[in-house]
Length: 225
Image (cartoon, rainbow, N blue to C red; front, top):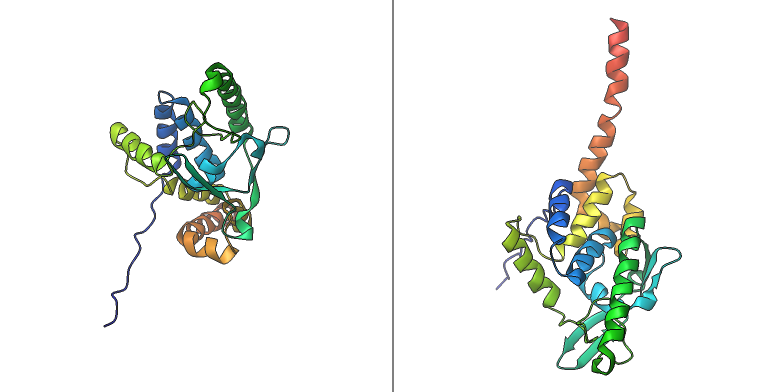
């Protein structure tokens, strides 16, 4: 018997107005969640990539993240960190200056937190960017669960945590960033993957770009009258 075809739901990421509204709401949320969500939006990193980030992966001088490991599992003291699945997923992602500034302040906060906790530290040799105050990593499902409650509490349109990645990509498309650059930022295996996922957004942006020429023809027609 042939299995029924599964039709994936259309991705409807947040638009820029919704992102601005969410960023305002994040100001009253715990520091680590505010930074994680903002970084997810500005970098397009996957949840496992965000959880796998250590401070050594951030080049403060050049404002670049080195995405080279992912958190697969963190439960009851068992931490499984691996390299990303594909070579393309191992990448460097540039950050906007405002995000870098926030990360510098967050780093100072976390280092002070680390010093204050002293012998109660449970992070071992790991120095994760996002973790409990004692250094233990978050359970791999924690960001998803927290974000779902955050969205519900604030009455936002529901999207998954993973859709922050799609939101990041769509905003870049709407800003006219080339699909190849977006593909590299997201760590896609090829630009074809990017085109397949964001084809509609790319076509819409392309039409908007084409429409910009309309003013030339409208002006020319007016001059000919």
